[in-house]
Length: 194
Length: 215
Image (tube, rainbow over all chains, first blue to last red; front, side, top):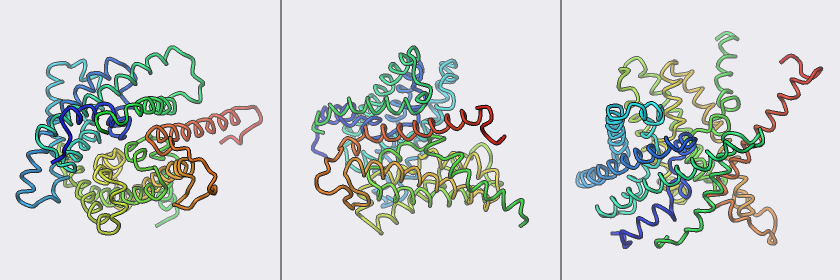
């Protein structure tokens, strides 16, 4: 059992080991959906929800697979569970908020291939977290993902009003920005016991 | 095989390496690219692992393309990819524990690499096996080149070595930030900046009167 306390795990997942800026997980939606604030925030929330569901299912699945000594099926079963969870969120959003559903577009089904979601499931297994630790870890990871997405979107909204050299526009500029944000987040290193 | 179809196969092969390079042009599969490119060796082994998964799963997807119902195709592709990733995971663990520890969870995360699912959906599901595998091979070589370009620059600047061989002698002050997370973003941004600047210059030259050859 990992010796870390719940608070430590949460702080580390949100700030010091932020999923996007320190561990490079979930970069596709981070670069793709962060152009506007009003889509970035719901995207973060949806991803957090999928992460929680995935982490819950992965915990149960892992117990089952270990009991039957079928660890080599871990990856396949995790990804199937995540795909189903995403389908659930998709149907829910389509029913309750069609406008948001359209705004997120292709990036909604792509949560399935968001490394952050699978990453949560894999890391909690690798670190042998208990049930409570796993839940806090996945919630912290989701919160950290949302935070990074919202920060990036706010900066990019400002950038639209300033004049940028033509060569640097687009992905190159976003990556440079992400680099600076990531450097800022390095300041949190060591917080929450690393 | 006549000349025309050979030329077409070659074109499919080159598409991934240059015109549609997955790292520099399509900016896909960023997570493993940035996370493991701290050294040239890591970048190469990650690239080769991805290459194996991409080529095998594209071949299998293409063989099954007429059998899989349209509604469940994505799920089928993901299960196929996950199977090959599990194979690679155990192979790397058996061959070199050192590399396995260095790459960590990112070997298993090959499953969610958008390049692989993208190729399976956009190309392999519509083409016969040979063409699909040739295209996948080109794509993965392009991916390896991208990873290597990033890994080599980061290792040279951040540690002063290439493949573990010291380049600048003992007085070199390593630029540590380059092997830390921000370095990954900044080096990739710089590569993209370089490409976009080159492209712009080429366009300007073609547009200038008298310049260009009508191409």
